[in-house]
Length: 77
Image (tube, rainbow, N blue to C red; front, side, top):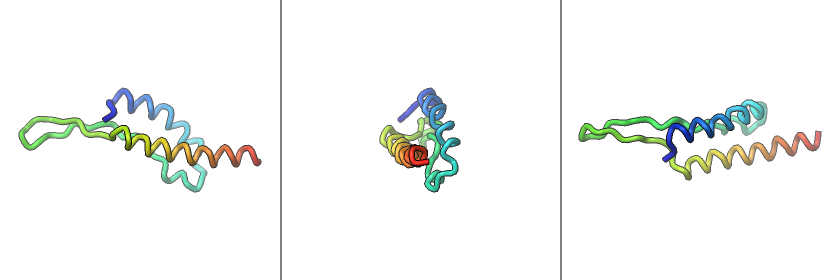
């Protein structure tokens, strides 16, 4: 699971990319990485819940695919 520091750093990069590609047809699939949250367990303890590294890789892959389409259009134009 990613900690809050890593999520902030990743989203600092993803936010401008998402804004730049907002007019792309597939942009609706772009999302930021959600911050981990603290949840209470049945025994009264707490545990951090958030995206795993493989979840984040899926998000980054979506950005990479849409980014490729975006820049391909820019080269053709």
